[in-house]
Image 1: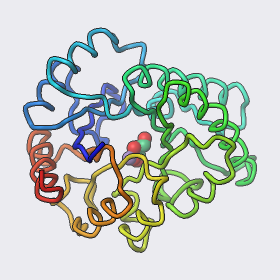
Image 2 (image 1 turned 90 degrees about the vertical axis):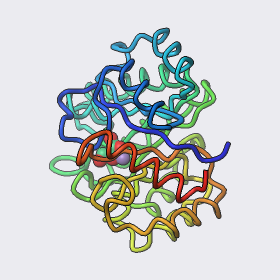
Image 3 (image 1 turned 120 degrees about the horizontal axis):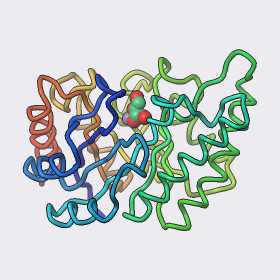
Amino acid sequence: MPIFPAVTVSLVPQARGGPFVLWDDLPTACARAAAMGFAAVEIFPAHPDEIDGHALRELLRRHGLRLAAMGTGAGWVVRKLSLTDPDPHVRLCASDFIGSVIDFAGGFGAPAIIGSMQGRWGGEVSREQAMAWLKEGLDQLGPRAHALEVPLLVEPLNRYETNLLNNVDDSVAFLGTLQTKNVKLLCDLFHMNIEESDIAAALRRGGRHVGHIHYADSNRRAIGFGHTPVGPIVSALRTIQYSGFVSAEVLPMPDDETAGRQTMRAFREAFGT
Ligand code: LER
Ligand code: MN
């Protein structure tokens, strides 16, 4: 599969102000994504139960779109669930919630994303303990995704959002400790701009572990609206033979339409399609 452009759609009012381009209902969002030229949508739902699977399938078909991925961040934003919470019941609810996203998205051939639901260490929870719980969670959920023939994506986040997985090297080392081989990295260029000394070099080191890209500029606006040099990043993706989606998880600034159209302009320029 070559590289395709995707755009984010948030269905979570509590996430307002967050880095999602489209905030409309799914029929409107799919129509707009297709009109802008995107090949896929990445959906951030409060819960997959709020989405009518048949209606989504029909919308995607009608607009020639695919589902690129589905985020689990609402589990944290809305319910404060994480895989590394000291309370075993909260960890169980976190795992159940992520499982429901894996099942729903997997039915569309798309992976679930674990970003903020990795949680953080601190207080009564040591770093070692948090990493052990994260490993336990991923080793349980990775095979669930594998049964649906999709990977599970884990996203290193910048230091202001987590103190667990912040960069590619640590995350690749962590993947090596898992029993499951079905977890891949979501490399978000915005987080990488903060945490990596060289984004392109980090992507090369990520190699076959890179499973998805959040395509955002240094200031989390559309690519081209910040100062990240995109040429070396595109070369790195070619070198590692990345195939999959580059997904605009960016702020809708100055407005959603301009952010979406700029992403597509930059995508065509960078990838020559
Ligand atoms: C959060 O900053 C982020 O990048 C999301 O993709 C994770 O939920
Ligand atoms: Mn991201």
